Length: 164
Image (tube, rainbow, N blue to C red):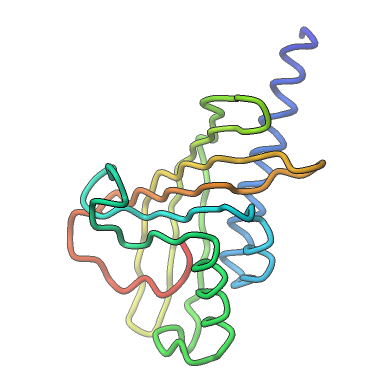
């Protein structure tokens, strides 16, 4: 294998481990650890009705800037998120991790995910394609953007009171 191929493989491994870690933090409701993965200018977006066009002009399930992400985490800590009493039990499977683009310190990455949620209302499976913009800050990767395109986002959805 050439040095270039080894470097590409090492980068893909690093990105994959980052995405696995982010999934684990979400599944374990480790929201402070999850929040620490974000850049200061991070954007978390879950479009409604398809792939999503311009989130400033179209409806979204979630469209949070960094400040709103932090507020959402603080709300979880109040214990007054009754839709999460008791907390959903979550497990996700992440696959098909690909680096689509690399420009300077930023990477555009995509993957597929299946999330199994067990809650008092029953069991739900959420399927999505996740798109990330990851930025290297120092020695670590951090999320500058996460877009979660739910497969069934054009239909009525159960309340999603956890972070997908």
